[in-house]
Amino acid sequence: MNGQLADDASNIDYLLGKTRDRGVNFLQSLNERPVSVLPPPYEIESLCDRGIGAERETNNLFNFIIKF
Image (cartoon, rainbow, N blue to C red; front, side):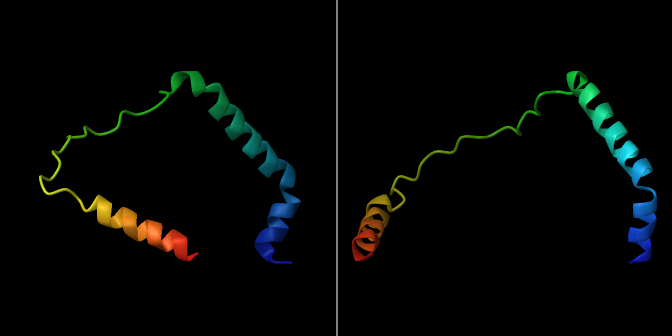
């Protein structure tokens, strides 16, 4: 067996205890953590006067669906 894995196997109780302790610590501190972070400000841009070619793209999609 790999040496590192053998060490882990022989110390499994210690490793599981450390994992449990970290998990409990995390869960106990949930009430102190913010529920979310605010997203960065989002500036609304104006639409292009000429459009974005949605009609052409819709036709392409429709034709693709008909083929298959």
